[in-house]
Image 1 (cartoon, helix red, strand yellow):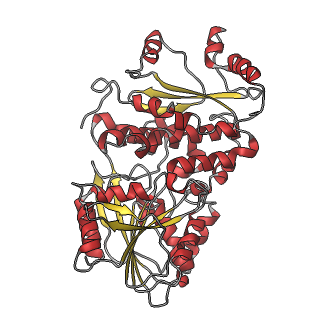
Image 2 (image 1 turned 90 degrees about the horizontal axis):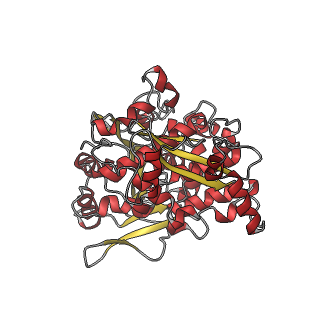
Length: 472
C-alpha cells in the first residue's frame, strides 16, 4: 500500500476537516481566558494578534506572552507531519490550496494553522475533561466509569445493554478494558464487525460450548483519571466476583488491569481464577507519554492519524488521532506559552493524570510503585506484542521518531528502540516485579510490516491466541 504524497495529494486533508468540525473547533469555548470580555474587544484583539494581521504587517507570528491568542501549525516535510509553534510563510501555492476545500497541501507545506485563545489557568483541568468527553461520549455526563454488558440480539448484532452491569459475578466472566483515546464501543467494534477475525472470538465467547455467563466492557476516562484510579473503579464493580475471570486489555487498559489485580486483587473472591491477555500494553510505561517528548509525540500521533485512516479505514470520531494532538497542544501552549519553550511541561503531564500514569520516565513514582511489588494475588498474564517497521515508502514516518536516525532528525526521537507506534515493545512484557512473569509464550508478531498498535485484534493470530489461552 504505497501512499506517497504525489500518489495521494489529499492524504492530509482529514486533519483540517476534523479539526475545523464544530464539535472539535468549539470544544474549549467555555474554558478560554477572559471569556466574559466584550465581543468587540475580543475581535479587535484577535485581529491584532492573528496570523493574517501579522502577515499584513509583514511580521512573523510568535506566541508572544502578552497575547491572549496563540497559534500552532501542522507542517508536512517530505511526507511527515510535524507540529510547530510558529507559522511559516505561506507560498502562493499554499495559499491557493488553503482556499480550496477539496484539496490538501503538498510536500513541505502548511497542512493546518490552529489559532486559538489561551485557556484560562483555572480551567485547564476542565478542558482536559472536555477532551475525555469527546473521546468517550458514553461517559460524558460526569466522566464516571461504566461496566457494560454485551448481548447478542436475535438479529445477530452484538450490542450493549442499556443498563449498566452490577456485580458480584459468578461462573465464567469475560472482561474487556480499552486503552487511551478509545472507548468500549470502539473496542466492541474491533471484535463485532462482520468479516473480522474477532467476530469468531465473540461468537465462541457468547454461544460456544464453553460460553461465558457474562461478557463485560469497562468504559472509562483515559486522560483525566490515572490508571490507578481506573483500577480502583474496576475493583469496586467486580468486588466479590468468583469463578473464572478472563480479561482482554488493550494498550493502557493493560496497566489498569495490572493495578486492579496486583493491588486490589483481594477484592475478588479468594477462589477466583484470573487470566489476562495484555495487547500492546505499556506495563512499564510508554515513551510516547514522556513529558520531554510531548511535541514530537503529538507529531507522531498526527502521523498515526493519517496511517489509521488509510490502513484501517477509520474516519471521523472513530479516528481521534486526526484531531486530539492539536487540542492537547492547545493545552500545552496555554500552560507553557510555546512548544519550543516548555519549562512547565511536567506540570502539563500532571494535569493529564491518564498520561502521567503511563509515562516511561525514571521519576514516574506511580509506575515505580507498581513495579516494586509485591502482588496481592498471582494472576496468569499473557501478552500480544509487535515491533512495527514498514518498508512502504509512503509510511516510513516511523523512522523519524525512533533513535538511530541521522543527526538532523535526532531531535524528533520519541522511542529509543522497538515499538508498535504507540508503546515500546520491551515495555509490553517488562513487569518489573521479580516474581512476576508471563504464564506462557507471548503472541509475538516480531518485526512486522503490518501489525501495529491499533490492529492487534484484526489479526487471526491474535484471535487464535485468545481462543487457546481462554480454552474456548
